[in-house]
Amino acid sequence: MQHIRNFCIIAHIDHGKSTLADRLLEFTKTITERQMQAQVLDDMDLEREKGITIKSHAIQMKHIHNGQEYILNLIDTPGHVDFSYEVSRAIASCEGALLLVDAAQGIQAQTISNLYLAIDNGLEIIPIANKIDMDGAMIEETKDQIVDLVGCKREDVLLASGKTGIGIEEILTAIIERIPPPKGEPTAPLQALIFDSVFNSFRGIIAYFRIFNGELKKGDKVKFFSTGGEYVADEIGVLLLDKSPRDIIRTGDVGYIITGIKNSNEVKVGDTITTVSKPALEPIKGFEEVKPMVFAGIYPVDTDDYEMLRESIEKLQLNDASLTFEPESSAALGFGFRCGFLGMLHLEIIQERLDREFDMTVITTVPNVSYFAYLSDGTKLQVNNPSELPEPTKLDRVEEPWISASTICKPEFIGNIMSLCLNKRGILKNQTYLTPSRVELVFEMPLAEIVFDFYDKLKSISKGYASFDYHPLDYRPSDLVKIDIKLNSENVDALSALIHRDHAYDFGKKICEKLKELLPRQQFVIAIQAAIGAKIIARETISAMRKDVTAKCYGGDISRKRKLLEKQKKGKKRMRQIGSVEVPQQAFLAVLKLND
Image 1 (tube, rainbow, N blue to C red):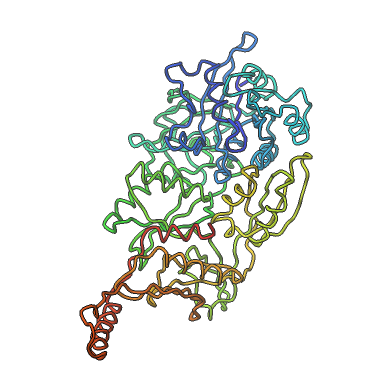
Image 2: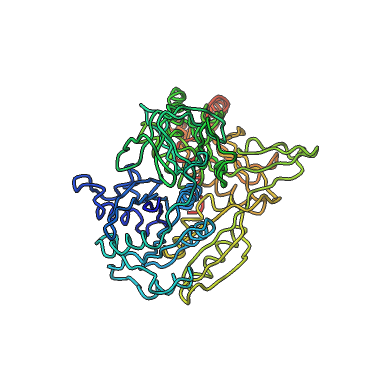
C-alpha cells in the first residue's frame, strides 16, 4: 500500500483535464505511441467532438521514482455541473486531487465547487496552473488566485502545459511525494466503493470500484449494500487502457468486477461491495440515489417505433445510470417516455446518443422540473408533467425546487448578470471579490428559471467569460399556473407548461406568435390560444388559404357572387370541424428558444 497513489483531476469544463491525462499516460509509457490519440480516455465520439468528458474514467499507471516503482491510479472526472454527483464519487475514491486552473482564464465557478468537495473529503490538493504556453496566459495572476483560494504557498503551485508536456515530470513527483498512500485494514471485512459502471453487451455490467478495507478474490461471493443483491465475482482486475484480469485485489487498489448482472438498477454509483462470507457491518458513507433535476417527454417521430425507442433507452440507461424513464402518452404525440435528466446538457447528450447509436429520431417536449402539489385535503403529490397538475379548485399550493447558483465574472459584467438573475426571480445572497478582476455572485433562484436558456444568455451577456455552478437547496411555495395551448379549441398537451403567474401572459403571447409563424396554413382558419383554466390570455389566428371562387363571375348581379362565397364558407366550416392541425417538430423545439 505504501507504493500506491490514488488521485483525480478536478477543474472547470475546458481547462485541459483530458489533455493533461494524455500527457501523464504518455510520460509513464502506459500507452504506446500507436494507441495515442487526443482525449485518449474519452471513448465516445460525442466527447471528442464537444471536447468534454461525459463519463468518468479510471486508468492505472506505473512510475519509477528514486529507484522505486509506484502504482498511480488516475480517476478522470467530468467537468460539467450536470455530472457533479459522479465527480463527488470519484473524489471519495481518492486521497489526492490535481486542481487544474487554466492560466488564460483564471479560477471559474466549477473549480471552486469541486475544490470544496475535495476539501470536505480531506483530499491533499496539488494546485497546477495549466496552459502556460498560451499567449494570453496570466501566470503570476493565476498563481495569486490559487494562493488566495487554496491557502498554499506560491512555490507549491506547479506550472504545466498539457499540450506541450511542460511540467509533467514535476506533477508526477508531486503526486508521489505530496499525496498520502491509501489507509485501510487489509485483514478487515471487504468494503469497496463503486464510483462508476459501464455496460458491455457480452459481459453485462462492469462496475469500477476502489477497495477501502479487506481484499477481493476471484470467485468470491459478493453483496451490494443498497440493493442487497448477491453475486459471484466471475472476473476481477485492474484498469490499464484495456481491462487486465487479476486473481486478487487488495486494500487501496482501484479495479473492476464482472458478475454477469444485466439490469442497471442492480448496480448503483456510490454503493458499497462486501463479501457474503465475511460481511462489513456498514457501507461507506456518502451514497445517495442520483436525483434527476429536469424532466422532458421523448416521443418517436413515427408511433410504430415505440418499442424500438424503449429498447434504445433501456440500453442507454445501462451506460448512464442517472437517466430515469417511465412510459407516458400524449394526445398530440402518441406513446412515448417521460425521462428525467441531470440538466440540459445531459438531455442534449441523450438525444444525440439516441440518434447516433440507435438511429432514433425523437421529438422532445418542453423540459420542466418536478414540483410538489398540495391538495386542499392535505395530500402531497409529485408533479413531473404539467398535465398531472390537479384542478385549481382542489389545489392548496404548489412548491418548486430552488437552487443556490454561483457565478464568477469580471467586474464590468456584474450589472448585466444581476439584471438577468433578478429577471429570473433570483435573490442576491452574496457578492465577493476573489481578486480585483474576479467577482463571485451567489444567488438563490428557482431551478425552473435556469432550465430553458439561462446558460446561453449568461454566456452571451458576459462575452463567454462568466462561469456558472449550482446545487439544489429546497422546495418553496410559489404562485404557479398551468398554461394550456389550444389549436381550434383542442388542447395540445405536449406544449402545456407550468409558469410563474407574473410571466404567464408574456409566455402565452410569445408561444402563440411563434406558433403562428411555424404552423403551415390550412384550407380552414386556425385559432391558436393560450389559456389558464377557462380564461383565454392570448390569441393568434392563421387565416385560411382560399380559392378565388368569384373569378369566373365578371359583371352581372352581386347575388351570384354572394351565393358562391356562401357555398365556400359552408365548405370551410365543415372542413374546420373534421380537419386536424398537424404540429411540426420545429414548433416543439421553438418553445425552448422563446426568448431568442
